[in-house]
Image (tube, rainbow, N blue to C red; front, side, top):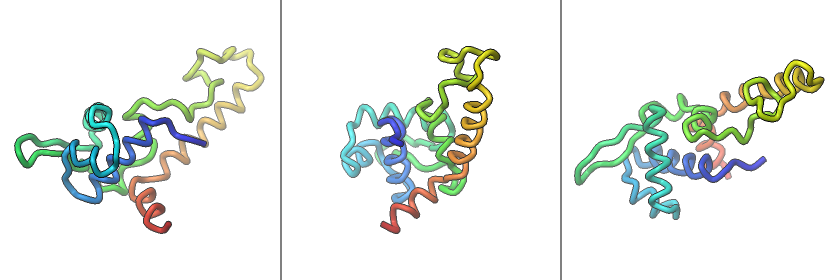
Length: 134
């Protein structure tokens, strides 16, 4: 399973912020070799989701609004509106679903519920720990 670039870049930015404690969009862009405009857009989404705080001025930048252990992978997916892990045949994402008449709907609903649990169980801290073990 691959995440889309919004989620990947948002995670990279969050990891950079977690490592530094406080970081500007420019520094994130340079250190992670990511496009600055795209990072700025993602940072605004992460801020709107209350995952980061920002400050202005010459020492301005971004910091996590919560401890890394309190930010779940699902929080990041929600912040950047990444529905790539959502199963196509659920009532919540009904554009492909036949509704109550679909014989697969109960299965995909259960699958979606389990995937949500997995995404919620991984935190930014877990992701950082896994990366550091490599």
